[in-house]
Structures are given as structure tokens and as C-alpha cells.
Image 1 (cartoon, rainbow, N blue to C red):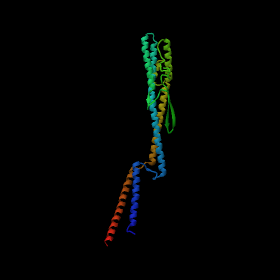
Image 2: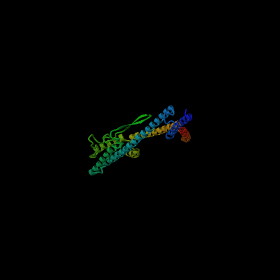
Image 3: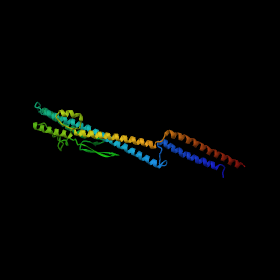
Image 4: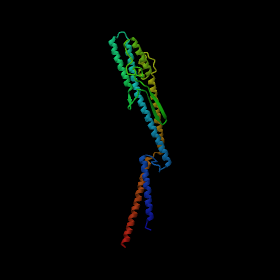
Length: 291
């Protein structure tokens, strides 16, 4: 048997063991996890991975909720502009009914009304992520880990409000007192359909004689508030899951660095022992070869 073979085997085994341990320590430092792979602790690794997968799903649910909330804010802003346009149209119609206006005055007011109707359709074509929001009604799905919510955005085109016919012609005209009254009734009805799209107009609308609960804006506002609560809940869920995951699987970096230093020292000793054996063995073989 060669001289010192047991010693070198021990040194090589120790070197291999220390190198494996050192690699695992580096993984724990790099990943920040006590269980960077299933080899460390299969059951704890599985639990940790499930928890982090759940954290990812919660974060995605929160982002979905915030995206829909942003879409609703866009829709609410456009709906508010529509109520402003309807209020302006009503004021122009009431102005046209006054006996001090001549035909030229009414024609000017008619053009103003038609421009406002066009503005209503422009509002209805407002887009979010290349999707038009108010030009036909839209159902939105909010997907999350707690389930799926459906939110409906109303149709606020001039046609749906009764301001234009199927060919897009404006149904409002100021030709005579009867036409003016019919136009006023249409706008009153449109405001009733679209009421509530802008709470800042509530006082102005009441001054004009409306008793409006501002249904659309109230609905949009309530939906946005609910989504804000939902987002807050997801944020708390994510924070709690992250805290639990950290308690369960986060590595102690300071301790791991200390372990790595110790392992590197052991590795150097094992390498030194192996090198010394090789040098001694070479000397012996040279000595035997000279005899």
C-alpha cells in the first residue's frame, strides 16, 4: 500500500465536503433563502415556493385592481365632461326660449348646441389602453385571488342619450317654441340618464332646477372606492405573506458570511494537506528511482 494513502483520501473527502458546503452557503447568500433548492430541505423548500407563488399572485391581483381603477378614473373624467356639455346645451335651449332672441340669435345657439353634441360623442370615444370606454357600454372584469368582479360602464354616446337619431343627425332644434320645448325635454331626459357623472356639477345642476342623484358618477365613484379598498387589502395581504416568508425561509446573511469564511479556511487546509501529500509522494518516488 502506498505511504499515507488513508491520509490523502481523508484530505480529498474533506476537501470535497467543504467545497459542496461552501457552494450551498454561497447560494444561500446570493438568494437570501435558507432553502435555495429542494436538496437543502425538500418540504421547507416546497412550502417556501408555494408561499412566494402566492405572493406573486397577490401582487398581480393588486396591479389588476389598480389598472381597472385607472380606467374608471378616465371614464369618470369623460362622463363629467358630458354632463358639463349637457348642462351647457340646456342653458342654450333656455336662452333660445327667451323672447328677446331673433332668428339669427337662435341659429347661433343652434350651432353651439350641435358643437356640444359633437363633444359628447368625443367624450364617449375616450380610450384607455386602446379601448373605447363610453361608446356602447363596457363590462370590465377585475381578476384577483379573491375572485372575479364585473364592473359595467354606461353608454354615454349622443345616440344613447337621445340627442341624435340613427343617422347621427341632432334631434335638438330651436326653430319654434314647440321645437324648443321638445329639445328641452330631450336634454332633461339625457341628463336624467347621465345624471351623476360629475359631483362638482351638483350645485350647478340643482340651480337649474334638477333633482339628480348623479347616478353614473355615484356608481363610478363607489366602484373606484371599492377598488381602492380592494387594493389596500391586497397590499396588506402581500406584506403579511412577505413577512411570513421572511420568517420561514430568509437566510441570516451575517451568519452565512461567517460560515463561508470558515469553509474557505477549511478548504485551504484541505488543499494544503493534499498538496503536501503529493509533494512527499513525488520525493519518495524520485528517491526510489535513484536507487
